[in-house]
Image 1 (tube, rainbow, N blue to C red):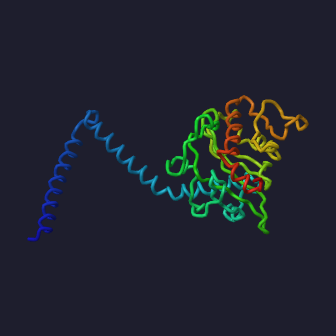
Image 2: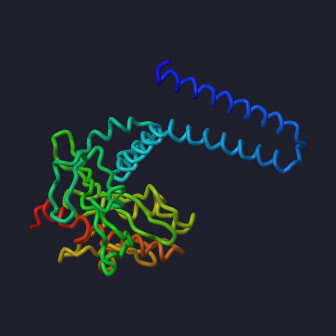
Image 3: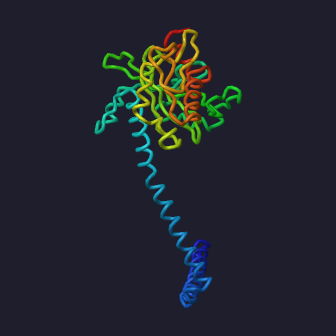
Length: 287
């Protein structure tokens, strides 16, 4: 008898022994009263094990679908922030109007050796190799770490002319980190729109960051003042078009001061030197 055959035979014998013991234990367990501690514990154990297997299988099996839905939702939000989204539209076809680029946030240049279709900016912000800590005194948006590279979306018309620049932004509000997109006109200064696709602020208060009526107040606002500093912010009360500096102000969210401050801070952070300003200055020829 070869060594392999002998090992297989021994393994089969062990299996038979284990199976006999398992069957004996199973029969003994069935003979126990239903209210016995051992039987209750065994039933709970096997129930938890079966549920864990089912949940794990579902999570793995559904992951491709979840990723596809996540990508579709991101495209829908980007289309929405520039005013192109309509219910029922072919999102993938409409999204082809965008050119996706990866930008070196420090130098402000496009990065050609990173695939913009697979680069995950949020994931990179958690990777020590692809991100850097933000000094506390400059971390006004409470992002803690910022990615070295960012994804930007350039909307172009059929002639290749730039129509909008969409920038991912995020920052902490009252309860959560708010993730969204800010769209600018080709002058890199005039706001087309803003939206937040992931946030956990108080419904009816800070959660109004997703309210279309409030988001409409942003259109036409200016991000930078004449000195090139990001000054767009939320202020209490209704901003009158006639008041000085109205182009740099948006109505704060009623009853949500900390969320409003968070929105102001994330705008100042991501449009500042630690964010997209080096890129926007170069892209718009301000240097």
